[in-house]
Length: 350
Image (cartoon, rainbow, N blue to C red; front, side):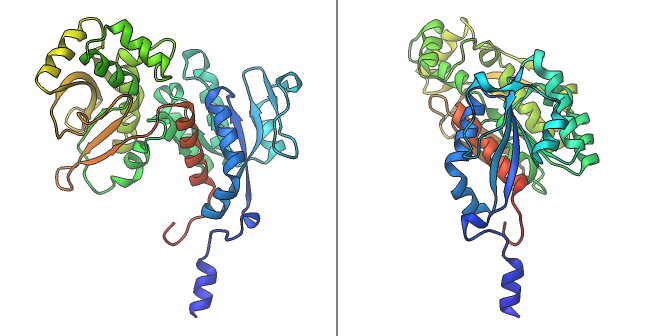
């Protein structure tokens, strides 16, 4: 009986060569998309041994061209890519079970990202996305499409790159009666505020963030509070079922007037932080405030581009997650994590 139970309960491959291959269609081949492809190629054996699945890139789609990897998994030069085909045709030809989105979160690409995600979900193809724009505007439609197709959508890469805050909000807080979310989910804002506290001008602080690869060429979404608010809107949607499209945002920006506040807070051993928050007591509202944080506060302890989220659970106590690199590699790792989750067989402790 014991041997039979062990045999039927084993769901992971002990030999990497036994792991089933799961086809993945990737949309977007910028820095995050390239890092995702590289990680799957590099870590395929490890993923197979540890999780019993070997995701493989079956096709890569850019805005006007797409390609299929060669037999060895390498992609052809861009000059040899063909024209972009309809997504349903690509899914049919590849037999892919997962559709991964690493396209920019821009208004121009939002409708296409939403339409392609809905197409995949309705066909029973799981969607893994680091793209935020369509999550904010098409959340209900995406959820309905997933239910119709019996598929899953995972958004870890959109809620904090390698920081697993989305996983906590989606499943780990169930039954804990989470009442508040308080977060510094934008590494650029935290880095800039720390530099201001050290005496930098705003321009110098932004320049330093760009040189370290922390800030994008245009950091306006980071410093206005828009990016932090977006991530908390998504976390609140996962935790409480809010529709992000209906959430109102009230944000204080990091700007030239912030320099004096950062210096004054530092003189009292405090740290100024751009804190995004939401509460079940104020449904449909996300606020981003410049707050003075004290020692002992998890948000006070952040250094440079580090991020953290505090989920307030009155009886269970605060649940805190911090760290998680803000980089193309960090976002790619979140995509890998979500891909493994939707593709890997699960039973027992898995």
